[in-house]
Length: 115
Image 1 (cartoon, one colour):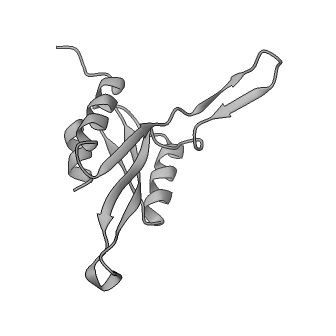
Image 2 (tube, rainbow, N blue to C red):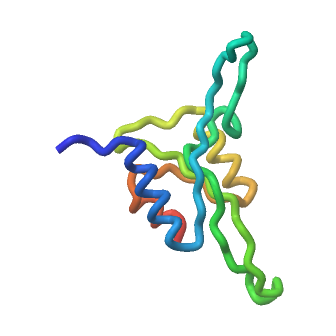
């Protein structure tokens, strides 16, 4: 049986998490040379995750009980895919600032990480 591609895993994660409190969007990172010779960078930042968005969390009653959106960043990898130093730095920075960032190698990884 062929290995599932990262694109297929990404699509499964987007569909699974969009059924609940989360919303995810594809974040293509890279660059391209324009016809006039200028360089165009795109995506959030070098090393930023494949999928970005938010998950809604509820603040505790002592904080008025309002819901807020927590930044969500998912780096999708095939089962044996390697995480680059830039990608790990991004994940560490998001988590250090109160966001939720992780590596997912399957839809199940992503669902379990956002519970």
